[in-house]
Length: 109
View (cartoon, rainbow, N blue to C red):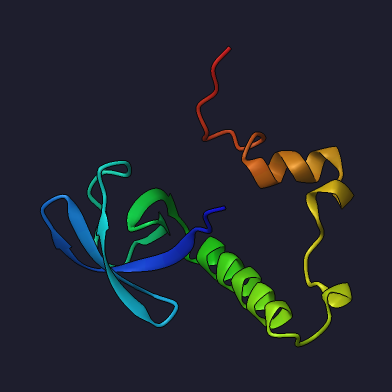
């Protein structure tokens, strides 16, 4: 399993961005997202940016990663999770989660 890490672009290099996130600095490939600007947020998997995200989405992902780290460390008990599992979401919430009801997203028929 691979977990995406939200990282903020600090500076640019040809084909790469130097990013900061979750206490580390990484040189990240940007081929899949185009050239970002300093301050942009990227979702990074294995040192490759897979998606541009908003600061709000970065905060949500970071909060989820913090929750997972706390549970892994034995803190807080998993029963008090601050998010709903996809199996507990309504059809409308699932569509929102996947971006399927976002009119700005391109769809194919």
